[in-house]
Length: 168
Image (cartoon, rainbow, N blue to C red; front, side, top):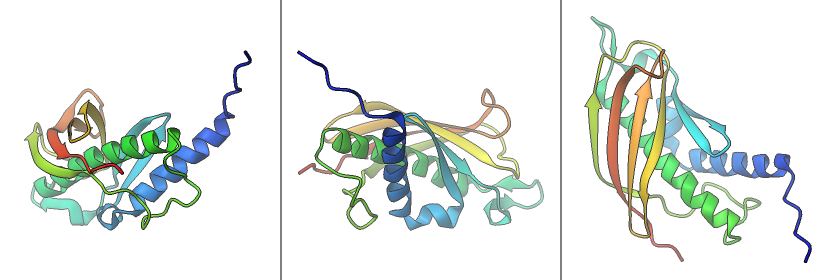
């Protein structure tokens, strides 16, 4: 019995990039905050591009705690959304050809989100990675870590629990 040949790498990369782009465009708040995403394989890194509007205390200056919390929550939700979409696409239930912000499946809803502020967020770009700890039909748990200059020196971390959307 002959095995089917795997798809060429560039096809898979294009499909993943289209999926991520549609997902990010589906949430206008992401561009308002100046957040972008860097995808390497199936790993997403959220980037909070520095802007003066993100400063909460101009005397220090320090990133606003609400901007930090929003950044972490966006990273968690996009990680979950990408996980859901990629599963749907790989199982043939969804096609990237007609994937637009209007045709996206529903996103997870936040149940609770706890942020630990570990140090002052400096006036520069910030990065975050989310790790899905539990992913079920109705519930998901995600841990997010954020850093600026050194991946080992986190300035914030968060844990969130999310209600998963019903799947058709």
